[in-house]
Structures are given as C-alpha cells and as structure tokens.
Image (tube, rainbow, N blue to C red; front, side, top):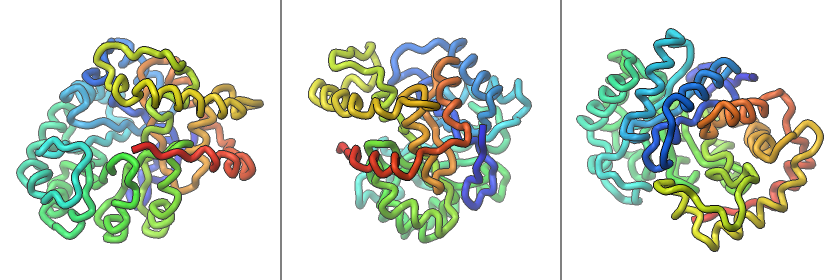
Length: 319
C-alpha cells in the first residue's frame, strides 16, 4: 500500500480507503456482518488506514461495525463519517437555507450520535453529507464544527459534494473552511479535473474520490440483463436503457486489462490514483476478494500519459 497526505490535515492516508456504505446494509440489500467484518479486517491487514462511513449508512450500522474493529485494532486507523441533512434532501437544493439542512443543534446531535456508534471520543474527519453553494456565506455550521473541534470531538472538517456537481464547492475551497472535499471521480465522470482539483491543489485541500467504480459498472462484471437483488438501490440507478448503454461503454474499456493491470477494476482505480491531487480513493468493499483486488491497484505504478489521454474520450456525465 502507498500513502498520500490528505491536504492540510497532514494525515498520511492509504491511497485506497474503505468505503463503508454497503456494509451498513439498507439500500444495498442483504449483507452478512461476518463477511463485512472479515473484509474490513483484511483491508486493514493489507495497509488500509482510512475508512469512510456516514450516520445514515444502515441507520448507524456501518459505524457500529467499524467500532468493533476499531477496538480490536486499538484505533490504529483513521475514521471519517458524515452528518445527514436534517431535511433529508439528497442532493441539497440550491438556495435551501443552511438552517433547514444543518442547524447548529443538529450538527452537534448527529456528531455525538456517531461518536456513540463508533465508540470513539473523537472522529478524525466529520463531513457534511450534502452541500449547496449558498451555504459558504453562512457561518453557524462552520462555527459549530469549530467548537466541536475545540472540544476534542472532531479533528478535521470536510464536505461531501452533490453527485456530478464539483464546481459547487469552488467557493468553499477558496474560503479555506474545508480541510477536505469528497467528490465523484471516475473514468466516466472526469469533471473534477476541470476546476476543482486545480483549486484544491492551490489551497491544499484534501480530495477523497468516491464512486471510482461507477457503482460497480467499472468492474466490467455487469451484463445488459443484470438483475439487482431486492433492496439494492441500483435497480433504479441503472434503469434498463442506462444499464444497456453503460455495459456497452464499459465493454470498450476492456483494453485497459493488459500487462500488470489484471482487471478492469484495477485499471479504473489506477485512473483515479493517477491524478496527483487525489488523496485517497474509497471504493465500496464488501468481501475479502474485493478488498484484495481493490488494494492491489496501489502498487506505485500509475497509468501512462498516453493511456490517460485516451481515457479522456470516455468521459460521460450522467444526471
């Protein structure tokens, strides 16, 4: 495993982190806690030291699973979690008053709830789970997080951006309020490269790349007739027409599997790691097999400039 610095936090985090949404269950259908815990332990054994979760993942179940391993490992890894918006709007609508989504008492209440779930006195990175650009002009949310930081309940402040909307964070990054931003970045959605990454580099803001495998499509394992199991939210995300087009586009990416790149999964993760502004990439991990395959992409070998140039033609942003 290789490591990078998460912006101005100076945390030395693993290039591949552990995305813990799926192990919470809920929107991902049935899960097996023992399988999830084995995947988490194996990831840590292979060098992962950054885990990203959220209060809403399985209604706190993801955080509770992490707590078990955190005690076992005596806290030898970093944990990031997220505060859900009080109005439960995903994504945040532009113009929504910050007090409807993140009033001060809600931020404190949810942070303390996460700390109880995680059985931690202090979480390394606390993030707002959605963002609207007009909130940068408000101070209550930020002052509340600063107070929590002063009280020793959080170490750093981050924001998870709305899907496919990296530019909504430009003023936020410019302001210096956020220590990190979490953004969708993959072979299809390359939009953070346009402006966000450049500004994050200038302001030394950490970048957490999420959805690097496009909710699983960039593993190359989907077929046009794939049926997602009951309860899996991707049943709606990949409607029949979208699934068909996605599989066709992924098929044209199979050239990535060559030489040291043993799978499309590895190639897709290496794409993310090949951008120097990316601090860590957080694919969802639900099994030991996924852990081992994902982590194998952090071997120090990045994609060539020629290959990255070719991959630019696969840019495809979906709404």
